[in-house]
Length: 423
Image (cartoon, rainbow, N blue to C red; front, side, top):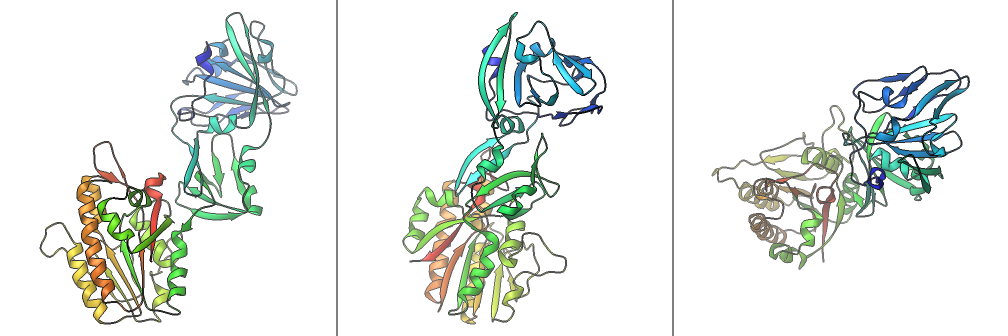
């Protein structure tokens, strides 16, 4: 009987909020197959008979709630009264008799939405809606009657606003919004019983104390150009987690460079982050080109065969001329010629470290060999460059069950890119 009430932190859950007052019907919302409206007295199990669920939390308007199993829910009758609805059953523990129902939350293992909470470079927890809601209750005790058990809870506080103790927080939504909210804007984040919402977009991540963000790089590039020429080496797919493993190729780089975390914009993909890195804007703007701020300088962008954005500065686009699947050789040769032109600002985008990761896995020996070659290229370019050098990436990578690499998720492996400065 005890296992019926365990709420796993990584479980898949549906949360349904039922609210009603006065003469209004009870409307059951959430990820249910059908919309359910309770307009009259009914057995709770009959109201949800088409849905699969394991547990239900019924809360009264006094904040006291009962957590019961699906079997026990069969004994609950929802009674419509003049001022609202009540839950009644003579055969269950007294806590199951709840006047003036304020909410009913249904736990079901067929819902995969979860909210991720981060602080700095750490993921703190992942909460499905039901887990999130349970954070707002204190457990008071358990009672049994006629073979049925019920756990009693009492609402304590708003979990979200207790968690958000900083003056600002990064909100990430399914629609690819990455926005810093200041404290007065926290009230715009709403939990509607089945999801966290900001600006009508479902939130998938909240990030306190985020590291340097991708959209801040454009300003850093501009500031660097005030006193020096700048060459940016952009190594696609090089994440903090890869640097942390301290491989042989990483050791070559860490002899010359100090690395710090750089937070990708979600989704952690090149298409999104090359735009954010080179424009300083989260969302693509119609008719806008990247690197517009650098038209006033003698600037060059050296790119590979996959180009996602229109550049405002001259771009050299490379192709894999010898068709060996390794385009960085051609990119390096083009970059060497670009260095000879002595521009104020040069960006060199190496692609192969990401390409090989997709084929061989995020932490494969083959990928480390590519990074070692990148080091030789970078060393050659920097030896002939008169000015400041900065290393950046757009995202990290993780390995799928099939052994191949991928990225784009909110996993730290994907989201934590790098920024490197010469020692």
